[in-house]
Length: 129
Image (cartoon, rainbow, N blue to C red; front, side, top):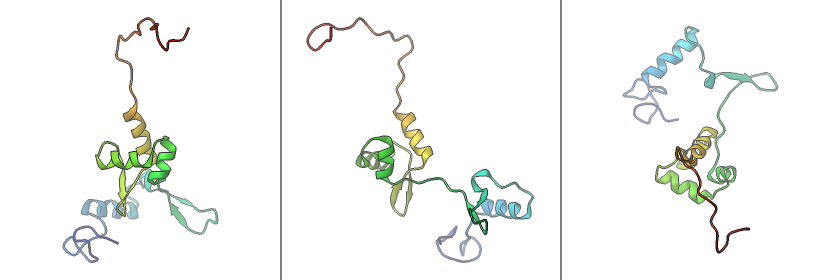
């Protein structure tokens, strides 16, 4: 496990801590019961009920995200490389959460300009009717 500070195991920041100072303080407050547990860190029991399992967001690979968005994995990776869409990198590989996919859809959305009215239908080659 990489630790805060130096990337090694150990004590304080110089030797590496698992959490930054502010995170360590929040964790201590949660453990002491003086701070509520954030919903994203809330635990829910497993079906057997013998241990708590942290609730984590789903993470999709490029192929899985591409299937959901109906685009190519290559396009997703290229847009992520250019920093045009949100993503996360885990183990050197691009990954997307459901929130990332929703934002990508929102970024691709185009609305008509205010006051836009389509003109009369065009006549001629290729026109129906």
